[in-house]
Length: 91
Image 1 (cartoon, rainbow, N blue to C red):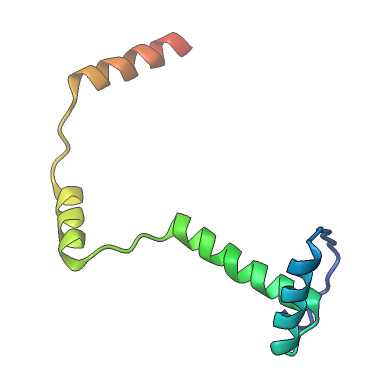
Image 2: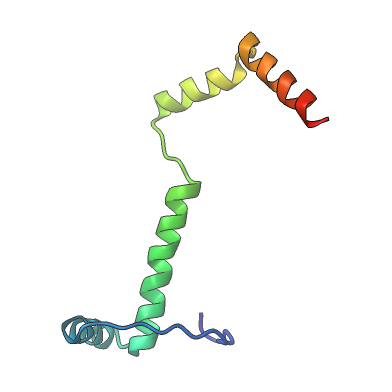
């Protein structure tokens, strides 16, 4: 983050009690309140996005997942018919 040109501004309102806690935490980390809030928000945002993009499963579940991918697909006639009707409706 150091050396990055910062051109965006965010504003927020906090209660006096929350502000005291944030200021104390920033001071404990030897950061400005702004630096502390940005770093904290980035860590939280990265965790939130990781939860949406990464899946952790056990080795046995991984084996079952890979086996399912390797199986030959089974044609679902009702689904195939619905897709065919949808395609012909678009023409």
